[in-house]
Image (cartoon, rainbow, N blue to C red):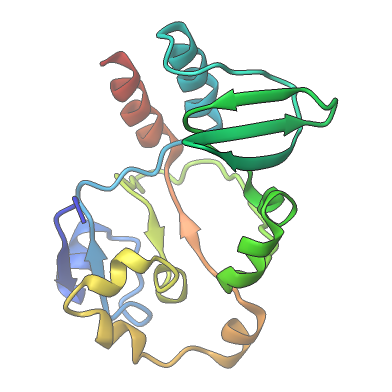
Amino acid sequence: MWARRWSTRLSEACYRYPFIQPSYCAGALLFPDDLAPDLRRMLRQLIPRLARQGVLDYVPRTTVVAVQRSGGGCIVTDARGDRYAAGRVVVYDGADCRILFPDLFAASGLRMCKLQMMWTAPRPGAVLPHAVLSGLSIRRYPAVASCPSYGLLRDQPIDVFIRDHGIHLYTSCSKVCRAHVDALLEK
């Protein structure tokens, strides 16, 4: 993994983030190089830039219904029946993966979930330079399993209600993320 991995004790986590409740938090895993970009904004800027550079052909407002291997490349078919040939295809489909690749999806062990997002006004004094996840949420990221302290996280008990309902917490500060995206796009 490219990011440096740091684990911190409760005292350091509370020092860095005074809004943390010590009675709830046992420690923290910090990825100082982590980026959590505003994907909607990033894609709206990245796709036109890559198209201008000739890196990709982008066909907006086109529903892809099939992607198939063909020789050393791929054939993409859209809902109108138009076909496109490419050496490489990037599929950014979210929940449509089960429609485009039903066999791969069935064999993946993945399951569909419902995401409920809430945007709030920034809390005065609470600055998040990166995303903050609850223990149940961070367990979902395979890269975290490579951390030496992952076993301690994995072995922590999870409230039955939270576990049974699959409740995850993922918090980020979009202004900081936007600044990271702007810096990347300027390169």
